[in-house]
Length: 435
Image (cartoon, rainbow, N blue to C red; front, side, top):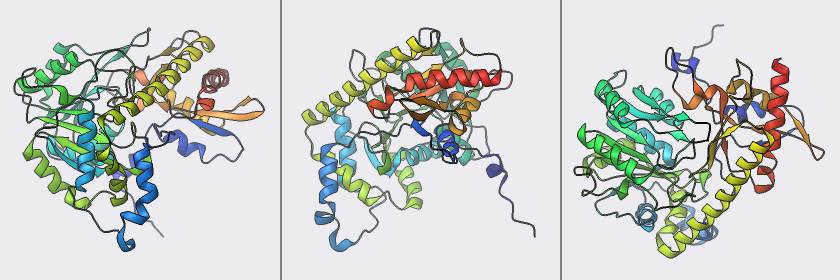
């Protein structure tokens, strides 16, 4: 009896680079344990105010055990919380519109739908700077919207070069994008965009009448000297005409350690965009009421408390990332590790250490399905995210991600200290097997 077929889109769909190793590892039958650095699944406790709200939720907030839909816009206090934490970083929230979304992911979808050309059209693509967080091109494909990109290059010293402004301008002229996407505290590279570079890109957006979209999932999580940056830190005096063309993607996942809460927000200074994005979101009805209740607790915290929290998070990740990079370079001389200025990732590039034909996807699958190292009597493996999926494949151009992997600093410290040796030993075993 013939079975119904799936769509062409489904027939070609493969798991995301950040999930593929975890899915493959789940099929293993042996007793090997995995240290999972493939996905930014934070393992720290949530902010105390959110924890207190969670503990009291059943008593105070859910009357008669009824959980109704919230307004599509989101609960008032949840929206206040997103604007409040933005303001705590020193950024003005005057004239901003916020709507609560199902994690940052729905905010990304609403943004793409709002700035790009019609499905199936190459008009008004989303412009991205690669390597780029995998969900952006994936969601654009899901929605049938076009993208265009420009690449950064990872140098031997672990820094990514920002594309030349002239190159960016040429692509804008050729492709006529609907908007330019930036991630100031960058996923996947761990680099941080300086305020002046952000303003230069904002000037291009004004000059060519583009939306400026900023993914601010990791705002305030940075480890270098200087002030925090944000698309909301750009004033009309800095960039005349910037008002009314900015959009930011917000989330409870990272700085607030609440990945599983699946609460985010879409913030904009355009009333038109806000109204239309809200109309589109009515199809989703609303974000999780319980998640909104928990995140809303932050609206009542003082700026002093919130800034103390940011400092605590930064101290934790800066020490962990520096230790990992130092240990991996000592264990694997010649390896390139991007120095994390911000967020909670580094890119590890093994191009100086491997034979021709190395593929980071195949290496990640080796580690997930059969690779193992005995450490203190325990069989372990390491899960990483192959960076091939963070670049779009361009005809005639080698994908730089074939020798690169993203490491997320999310496991407890005792596991992170094991990761450099695991990576080195697994790489050596894989290369020996390839021979």
